[in-house]
Image (spheres, rainbow, N blue to C red):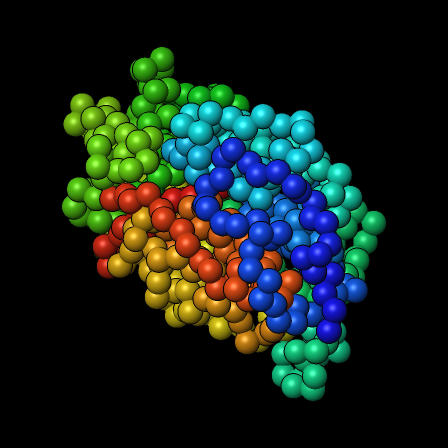
Length: 464
């Protein structure tokens, strides 16, 4: 069978980037060992999500000459990241740049790579790298914004039907401003992430009693405490729940806010009783900014700029005349506050995939083969082994979860991992099994992302 990914075809890019994060041969220089590509090549590969990993998937398919379409629910690329554009990332540029996207930009001749050791804000990352990649003439026409995927299935096959499902194209239904669209695809890469489905405030993975009724005083994720949302939190008693990087960032922002508004008080609730892991790897962390986060928040706790409540598993939030009373699982009211910021991580939304035959790890909800390799009970960001298409492969041939969503509830994700995932997937889809199997990735070691067995409240470890 012929392949539109044939190496004899000119690629979208001829020059190498000065800022590769992972060393790999370009498609034109890799060994010519090939097998049949995956799926009907007259149909595009559908990429769900135009975040960093989704755009990296597009860049890889573009470079290999494979047709693709990107479906993004938001009104711009990297819409989820744009919601927390005020956040300074803990990873420097050298861990943020997708090497294939950088090659395409270099070939276009209108992009200058940033200082590899500088740490940007999320907005800088979007505007300096992701927006230019999305604007490339070889990528931009294939991006469809305001397309919220409602379902992914096999054409003519529900979940129960065997038939010829692995030969049938995928059928994607998406909500658009003009109604519903149906897109047929040869393969699907789901890189929609987990940002839109945050974990609840309550212990045990379920909402706390009264959580929905108190929504006007609860924010999930990372609000712009020192900017757009300043008035909401200034002079208030604010509770931050969670022990990951997002929670630490929120605590530090509130501490800074309290310096200019003495009536602002910060309470930090964690489920673990021993806070030692909160401080992370410190100077031993190979990502300097990430290590510094732990050191800074420890200083804030030591100076009593924040009240740390350990061993707090929340069962209920009750409205009282004095504010919101936070009640633990023993029925004891532990604190009374005005506002709550929930930074307890996120979980994948699998509802649109119900008609597909997929396998997931029981603990993490990650792809089944990947789950044991990334379980935060046993791994930190840096100890996750290299993995690619083989570990992400599903019983539903041609379907892949990639990026943060492939990790399920595990917080140990770094963008470099996602870039390597989609490089390997794209190689497989184009029939290049040698490149797909050649997975090599060395991640910087950390001490922050690991969790203890009783704790599953870490925030994002990723940079997007």
